[in-house]
Length: 138
Image (cartoon, rainbow, N blue to C red; front, side, top):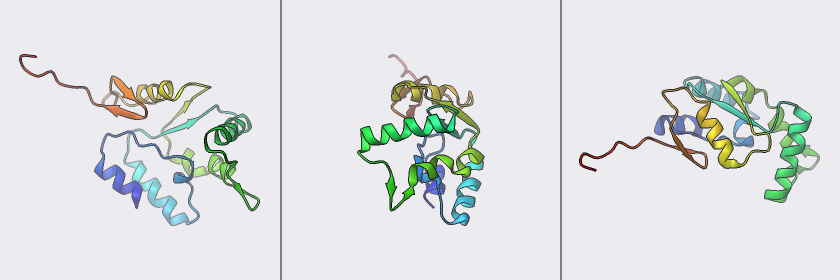
């Protein structure tokens, strides 16, 4: 599974599991992802706000603006399914609300919400950078 591979190969990394990456039609896959993520000290669910309908409206608008799609096909609303997926709330150890923040501010908020041993002083996009150790004589 890709979740196991990412967690194993990139310990300490900030990994963005976007909407469809946490929604499974096969319950066995969902259980495996939950098992893998249970080993991670920090798993954040990032939402525009706590209110489900308001969050849905914000996400729908963003999808149209950035992807040019509603994520609806043949009467199936993928966005609603992803938003309502119970697995995301089951595996999350915390929630970060974006409340209209920029992606950079959201990335900093995610990094700041991590356990002290995992937190890093700088963030670029959604990738956390490790503190650099000064070189002798520098």
